Image (cartoon, rainbow, N blue to C red; front, side, top):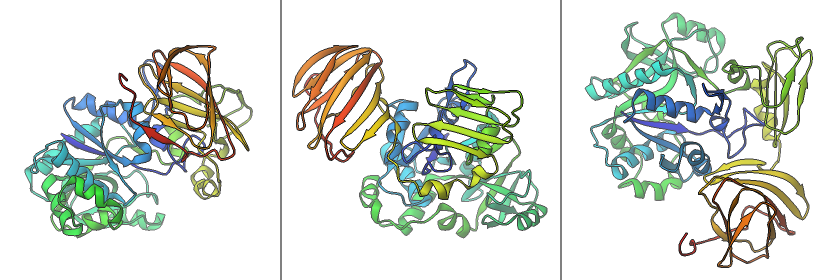
Amino acid sequence: MHIILLSGGSGQRLWPLSNNVRSKQFIKIFKKEDGTYESMVQRVYRQIRAVDADATVTIATSKSQISALCNQLGSDVAISPEPARRDTFPAISLAVSYLVDVQGVDRNEPVVVCPVDPYVNEDYFEALRNLSDLAAAGAANLSVMGIEPTYPSEKYGYVIPRSKDQVAEVETFREKPDAKTAAEYIARGALWNAGVFAFKASYVLDKAHELMNFTDYDDLAAKYETVKKISFDYAVCEKEPKIQVMRFAGQWKDMGTWNTLTEAMEEPAIGNAVLNDTCSNTNVVNELNLPILCMGCRDMVIAASPEGILVSDKNQSSYIKPYVEQMDQQVMFAEKSWGSFTVLDVENESLTILVTLKPGHHMNYHSHEHRDEVWNIISGSGRTIVDGMEQKVHAGDVITMQAGCRHMILADTELRVIEVQLGRDISVHDKKKYALPAGI
C-alpha cells in the first residue's frame, strides 16, 4: 500500500501548544501503553505500520515542518516538501510525482491520500487498504472515503452517494453547510467527506500535467511557487464523472479544536496540574515547570506552554483562531531534527534559550554576523567546534563565540545547553551555514 499523508496546518486552533512551526499533529497528548505520550503524527504512523509493515509512507508537508517530522519519526521518513503553500491539489501532485520519479513507484500502482491527524483505530487503516484495492481494480478513476455521520455537523463537507451500498457512485459533493442543511443531507444518505482519496498514480499525474506545465518531480518542485492555488476537491473530485465512495462506520474524529482534542484525552491532566473534586469535564495540558491548580472548573480547557496560557470554556475554544491571529509573538518552542529549543527570556539586546540535543545529533556549522553567543553546558557531554577547533564539553563548561566565527555543537549523550545570544539585531535570519568540518 502506498500512502501519502497530508501534514499541513498553521498551528492556531490549538494555541498555545501549537505555533507556526509546531502544528497540532506534533503535540504529544495521546498516552501509550508504556505511559509515555505520542503525537497525532506518531500515532497515525505507528498504526499504519501495525496494519501494513511494508507500506510506502510519504508525508507531504511544508518546509517549516520537516525538522519536527524528522524529530518525531526519524531521519529515514520519506518527505515531499512543498516549497510554498499552494493548497491540496499541487501538494498531492508533487507527492505523487515524488513517488514515481524519486521512489520508483510504478505509474499504475494505487495510491491513497489521507490527512495526518485523524483520531482513529486500526480498522480505519484496514479500510484504507480496501480503498487502495478499489483504486487498483479500476472500476472508477477516483475512490473516496465517506464517514457515517453521527450528527448534522457544520464543520465537514458532505459526499452524497447514489445508493446506500457499501461502495456506491457519488452523486455530488457539498461544501460545509449550516446545521439545518446538514440534516437534510444526512436524510438523503450523505456521508462526511473525510478528505481521503485513492487512485492510480497515473490518474493524478495526468491531471497534474493538464493543469500545470512541468516534466518531472524536480521540474515541478522548481516551479512550485508559480503554480496556481487550487484544492483537490475542486480540481479533481467535483469534475470527475467516474467516482465512487466507500462507507466507513468506525471511530473517526477530526482533532481540529481543543474541544474535540480533549475528548480523546485518557486523563483530565497532562503535566504538573491538580484538579480538586469540584471540577468536572475539565482538561489541563501543562508544558511549563510551574504547577496549575484548578478548583470548581466546569467544561473548561486550560493549556500552558512557553507560548502563553489558554483558559477557556470548551465550546468557546473553537473560536480561538481570530484572537491568535492578532498576536505578534516569536516562536517560543520548536522541535528540530537534532532536538528542540525553548526560549526562556527575551530582552532588547539578548535572547536566552534552552537547547536540547539528542545523542548522536548536531547543529549546522554556522555563523552570525550581528550577535555574539555563549553556550553554558548544563548536562550531558559532547563536542564543540569553533572556527575549526574541536573541544570536548561537559556540564559546567562555558563556550563563548564572537560574531562572525563559525561554530557548532555535537551531542555524544543527550546534551542540554543554555544559549545566550547578545546583540542589537538578533534575528532568525542572521545565520550563514557552512559545509561540515572534515570528519563529522
